[in-house]
Image 1 (cartoon, rainbow, N blue to C red):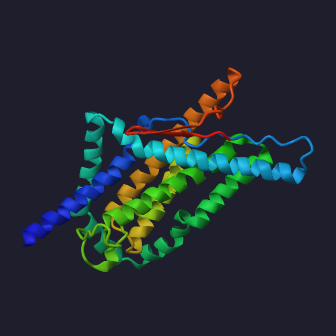
Image 2 (image 1 turned 180 degrees about the vertical axis):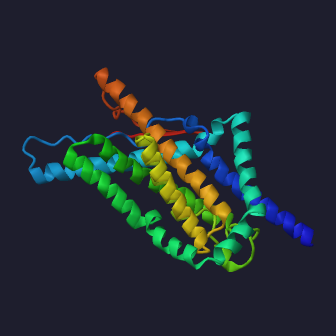
Length: 310
């Protein structure tokens, strides 16, 4: 019975790793999430000549908000359906990532936890670094880029803030799905690294704060490829992940898959956004306008499209 229980735990660990590795394959192939047309119709605010400044401002805010939701929903769908277009080589990469995660579960998790529990200073470090991976950290970073973009009139900083928000929203969705699907027990539950109960309410894998930190790092590293930006962003994200282990909130393997997931989502969102921007630029160069004069709804195994008359 002990052997059978160990096999079941191993299978659960492998399946959980495969789920997250499939989501995170964009790390090794950022272009694997193929871009598609926006799911919702494009909408551009066109104020009347006698509209007040207040109404114009409200209309522009509505346009920006609507565009953000449209981009987020469309990109989330593009990332979700991307495995349908993978070939054997792609799935070999996924299996390699899943194998690496499973190896960490069996060979590293318990040893690292024992070492972390014996260090009071490491626990204090975890408390101190934690805000960087939570909501306040995201708000401060996004607000900083928005402020810099507005004051210095730099569209790139405003775009970076938008990408941070979009990637974080998509990452949150994948994180919640992974947590409740995999159902891994936290280290502090003292049930060992092989304790999984899918849909049982345990939420150790992946780590939401680590995923958030690596999403922010991935977006910044993509927007600012200089080595010092990359080193700073990923060092801070790694520190957040280490802090989660220090607080006995997550296993090392949780942090590993969260880092992969965060980088993957951020790279995919930036990749899809750049394709969309280029398509809009080419369309404007031809004098074209968003196609919003048709009502079309279709669902296939590889696509989902809805264009509605606005």
